[in-house]
Length: 325
Image 1 (cartoon, rainbow, N blue to C red):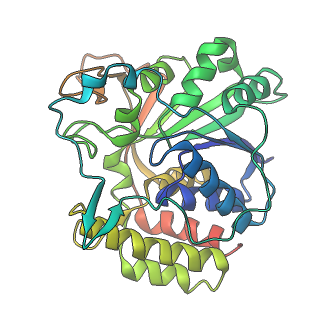
Image 2 (cartoon, rainbow, N blue to C red):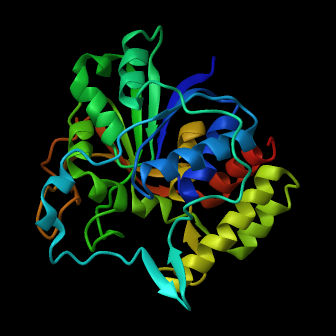
């Protein structure tokens, strides 16, 4: 069986970095491109972080800069008024502390971003694909949604869109919404309604694989540059999230890497259900994933939701990938 052709869409902060390394190292993937959007950080930062992480992986994988804003969210400045937003940045002893590092402590990349826009790359690549391509979206889904709007016919050449996003119980960016869906709800709705097979790794699923300082030590013990980088990355992530009061018992979740591992080996998923889904647009529940799980609701949806993951097997996949870099 040949390698799975994959495009990875990122907004490179902490967990995206680990996802990129796993995707670049996996023997299961032919990673044909990485598209970048805003989200965790502004586009200039997410692009630079992406280039630096890929340089660490040792591969000249094409990187395409995409959308610097969500599709429509910022057109209505009052849209977030009175929404209880997660604290993502604060000042501690005169130091700016944010969830994601604006710049990774890695050397500048010898590679440059490609000239084509990420959305154009997606459209052109999918139009001309000789075989179906899997898209893994671990960022706000702006790039993917815009590409689907530019040419809806590209959906026929998509094997699956695998998403890190959404939550059917409680959110993180708001009480009801996960960050990627909250940052561009319209894009998420477009992707869910595209007709493509969609698999969603929800907060419920990824939070089943928390990481602590002991896990960071485990990555460093691999003895590879990538393992050391990820171990240190997790330690710093725990520190920042503790300062922001969003760390649960000294544990953090590297959501995006878990999602990539679920494509490398789908058997790590221990609970998966099809459901008719929508994304709420506006109001207190802006960006919330709505999954109709009622007994009489349709189960022939193209959207499947992941609820649970085997932590040990998932971490072993990460270690196997990082041991190669």
